[in-house]
Length: 331
Ligand code: BYC
Image (cartoon, rainbow, N blue to C red; front, side):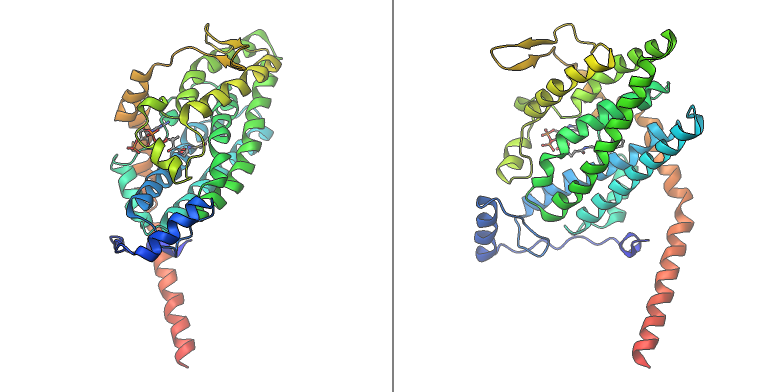
């Protein structure tokens, strides 16, 4: 158990402006090098990272729910074992990311409090329900697929602990995407009912997965600064386009249709054109009014309350070890 999870919340002291630190920071960014926790950094850089990294961590933690929903109902022992491993991986990702955010001076309790109070955001995609087994395939193929497109460039983010966490996360996401693809392939080659279940699920997940990349570039207030700081390497629309271009041939292998009548190859651009997304729906989900927002937050709150005894026990054990270590030192 990470001792930091039991430390008292404290407000991060803002570092005073430091001309030498500022010059060094500017140099690191200009040379496309890594900023580390001990380096001086502008407050706005720190805040942007805490915002993005903590939201990312929350997404992994809330993202366990839609799939956790199917662990007891997986159609075979093998599928159950795979799904359990995947959901555990998501928990691990959440923990690496909370740790990365903690290196910026934000206590874990504060991030958790912001999540369960509804103040913090997490990815819009996890506010959609998972009524069928095929949704485990769609989450793997589409949601993890979008996550990989978004996160591979983050392995080169300028903040060291975030970039390093992303390397391992991406390796695991890659396995997750393949297992989702394999579920859908199995269903699409199965009975008529299985094929229909796979298609119906892809119909529901396709557009929300495209929205994971965030609003169109013209409506993305954070992109320009995040790109100038080498946190984001590509814009939301660039990554969305990359994702669509990747999906089309994969959908052909699956024998499934992507639910967009405007999807077609554009020879001139060398990319697929695709139809408009329903951004009103996206903002409704962000405001907490998506199909499953209330369920997700309630479940997280309850789990947090029910886990209080674990945190207390871990804190008591850590304290006992600390006292014992002090006695040894004093002896
Ligand atoms: N959902 O200026 P913009 C996973 C917010 S989990 C919710 O473009 P930015 C998995 C945005 O935060 C992987 N909110 O923002 C787990 C901002 O609001 P604030 C999740 C969104 O930061 C379990 C506002 O809209 N991945 O893979 O430059 C099972 C304006 O946006 C969303 C990450 O978290 C959204 N989709 O770019 C399976 C990736 N999009 O903060 C799978 C890390 C935008 O100003 N995050 N907003 O109040 C990022 O790369 C960036 O933060 C984003 C947004 C591309 C998402």
